Image (tube, rainbow, N blue to C red; front, side, top):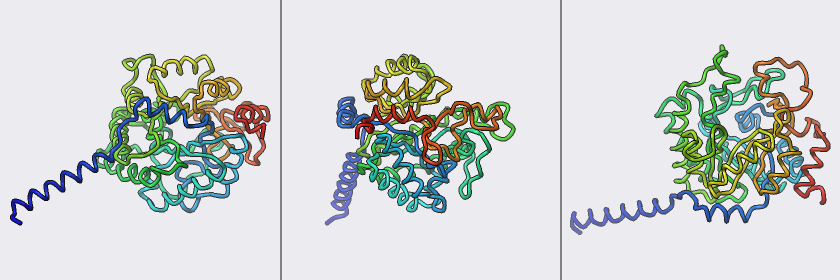
Length: 380
């Protein structure tokens, strides 16, 4: 074979390999595929879950604090409510620390959840609360402060460094590749509230933390790449990122971040801690996209977002429903957001989030009975 023929053969092989690789990369689901997926699902109802023994994502998943016994016990409580899904948060530093260990612990979590008949939505990045996460032993909760130890992923320093942002590709592709055909994973949530300024905790009056002035722009750059990385991993499950603030009346009226999420998610996810009429208005605005709707955060009692008002509507509309909080624990989300600025010295008169006390008893028995009646658990 001549050198010319060798080059031709090599070129053909290279072209074929690239065509195969290209064929494996997924594209955004069509409206039909998204709605067909939705038709095959039960009404998805559950919570944002972190075990009561963990203050944040790092403490939940690091090897020395991975508390499978508490996870098992608390997911049993979730199943008792009739919950069939939970939303959980990972962190890029966990991948950096021990990628294999992280994947193995996620697999253990999925096994326990599946034992209780619960599927999982996995969140890869998060723009909320502390912008300076650190591996290792996590600090103790600040008394009476809502989510005093929750951390952003990636950190502020990574977000502002293009080369370090690009290095996150291995994390996104690696996690999704491991579970891309796993039926225990229901949805991939790429980035939670990427452009959140965390003003209530780290605003102009903060002496300890500051957010990047161009955080929204940097986060838009990262989420754009993260969606592309997720598509390259080609998951069988839908991918999404939640629309959470601003004007949603038209695609033109949306912020650049909200518009990106609306135009690139397979299924439309959103957050609302507002009363029922406001939620209904938001839902009608999101109907323009002709895709399934998943409310991945709601329920803040003093704000007027309650199980009694919101959950029956979500069931009627078959909108997936994930309330924030489950068992009162180290995240301390029974306290309101303003606990960052206003001092609380005891349990608040009305819990902000959460359903159960640490001993497994209900905060409000009537809420538990309502949830069970809506999910059908009360009739079993």
